[in-house]
Length: 554
Ligand code: NOJ
Image (cartoon, rainbow, N blue to C red):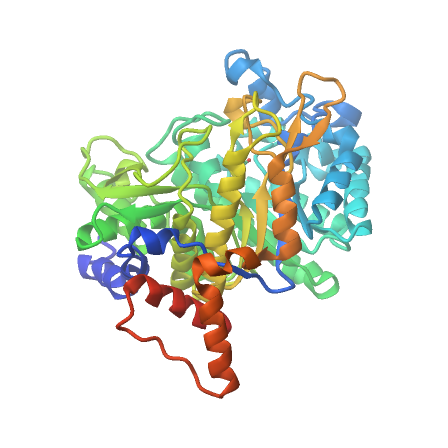
């Protein structure tokens, strides 16, 4: 079952995707770090994000059933300091306070997730819990009353325990069971919710839950379970999309997508094609695993089919560990997202290696290792170093790879140690630099970026790290029964970015950047009906500034 020949793989990489590394990896440090002033269009959707298990608490309130995260956190020794989501930010009882903060920030959108076991305590529609429906109705109505668009994730990891008991996402029956749950949510909330995401980070569900086994359900089966689970997730996503299409789209007119996640991968050496191919492969295995079938052609990326197929054959298996889709399934999956939703936090370097063949693993299937890039900053989570420039490159790669889709960043943010409260210069630096890279992608590279949703509104239950680190724009005192919320300095900064719709050039900085002069020059030329041309003999850094300036004007 050699599905491809090596020419195909190299060809694809060399012909187009190399373009992003070609364009950016040769930039000087100055060009990479240069601060771009400008604004987003008026309809840019600024938001903040959260998820049910991380903020709600009320783990067994009013008839809610247990999720696999309740089971996990109630097992001693699983989460740092024995923390659980039992109370979390208590948003189940305090969502009015959350609404207050959202209004103060002046966000246009709030990304939240629905807790499946709060709605269906045992996972099935027959167990419907009206108290859960009431809670989400109040929350959604509250958002709408303040003109805040609800962006709703249907599954952000808190699977009803009863469904984990039948093998969770490794069971094909989950496709129909999930569809039934989504159908109910579309029907019940879809008159007001117009932005749906089926899954949050399917990569984490499949690989971290079923390969590494670090997140529930803690299955350590790296060679095959992640591929099977991803296969089911893709089919479940597609089925929910079609349900919306067939039953609700016409009357509700919303959109449906999936929040996929990826870091950016820089090659070890941009001049060595094999290394660029390795970086591309890293993206295909992480992002392309889900995005390629949905946005490209209904099937897994060539690089995955080739790598897993070959390894499986050499390992003496009768068929590839990567399952295949029938032509009918491909047609069913292809095109099942109305916009591209991206979660992204960090940048790493990929490097070509040939690992030993005997271990069957999604990780080894990739023939690469990853390491931190030197030009990055440590954060409270060691695997999430900050390197803002990677975001611009990732957005450009998505644009090239998937035919310039409309993109929403559905998560991006940074953690700080929760012992520090409101003074968070790290987060201010992170938001300024990352959002500026998003702005460059939008204004200079014509990436169709439609929205940015910061992770997160509040410090909240950060999975295995419990409450030791927080991503919030607001601090919460988790030792206090009232869970008091306090805006951090970054909340003020984010508010200002939203108010200004980006980063307009401050008057006092115009002379420093020399842009005032160029602005006037360009204005004068335009007034005289002359299209400015960049003089290529200019010093390279000035050239770059003027090119950007001209692009942002035309
Ligand atoms: C991704 C997840 O979607 C979210 O739940 C988590 O808190 C953030 N990353 C930060 O780790």
